[in-house]
Length: 178
Image (tube, rainbow, N blue to C red; front, side):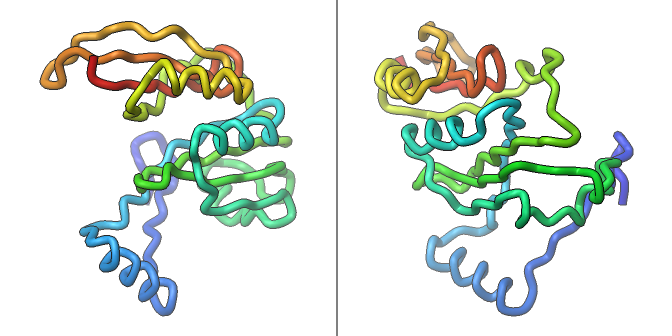
């Protein structure tokens, strides 16, 4: 079916051996649902440096695909021609104790462009120490923004810092209770 923006939405069902494996993993982790949520980060320059940076922040790789391994069958839903599209690399990674995934992608054709909207979405990670996490991010080569205290409804006082996957782009907020 098509969503209001005109994109085709695919219902992905895991059947057969893959479905049985997924249900076994859910049972083992005592989860009710697979929690297959992810945030896609379109990297415009060096995907290799971004992948290393995510590793240094503690992300573990679930899936790596180089340009010759990328399955292009979902691209028509986004009005992208699979014959002319080239994706350099896709990595799906996650924090070890979390099912939320980050999908890192570098598009060659059509090339991702920064037009400002990439600052309107962010991923938030709960950490034990915002300052320490920001230092790790700087050591990994990421640009960071100093932490600030925010008062949030329900949650109260939080320390929040930002990590930018690329300069001025794709913010990751890191937070902890102040």
